[in-house]
Length: 342
Image (cartoon, rainbow, N blue to C red):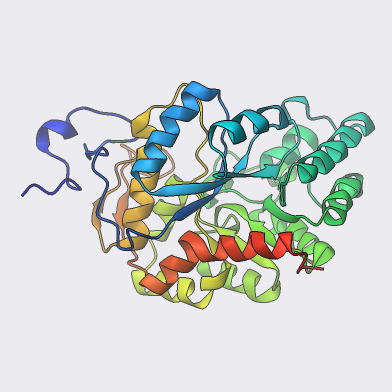
């Protein structure tokens, strides 16, 4: 019987940046826990109903049944009508209009309150190094305090993006006068986690440092309200695969109650079935199996001429998978709705 997780020679010749090895994404790998519903706790559902329907066909195929999404306010009602009970929302500002002005700040604060009124329980603050260049923006700015306070008063938790790949700090962020060092980008996180404590804070994309599990240990041990998500699939898969699987398993086991599954997929008409499916396929192979082979996703940050990345599965235990795929998000949202975080 053919192994659908291995590319055929003919399929491998058909190059797609999300399928450079020719995987048949129409047939997902056999799941370890097929009856367990999976929550994607970091996704961007937008782009219109046609694009969203294309995505949801992939999500259903791969067993993803609930989502926590960064969606603009004007799209929430339509998504809720079309996919009732499946999507929770994260409060975001309209970054298309972002300015460091009092007028924009007041609008942002108003939007946080409106998101909360519509049931959102998490507020997202994007403070990647690019925000320093674009807007001279970090989340510890006194200017931002009214937004943070409004979210706290509304009973929200938070998601923050504070750092990007080490490879970017060696290239596009090499000018520390503009972007700061990677180490200094975490100063804002330390301040923020303390300021909103005991409110939970999700550090997006492995808190920006999947390259360094020792640093993540330090961050999680230092801030009891801090969590992380597995989103930014290409980056996470590349760097987790470079760790010894035993080391990664130890990390996940130790912090099993504080890790959320996420893809960081952005739904857009320009993306197809292959793009969406590749992210779920790779993460499934990474967390559920001992797969050894080339990642199907082309990765320009890999440091190789052809964007080739070796994928090395961690093969987490079933009990850890249950926490990451489902239980941790349920506890987080349930706790926020019940007002258990102060």
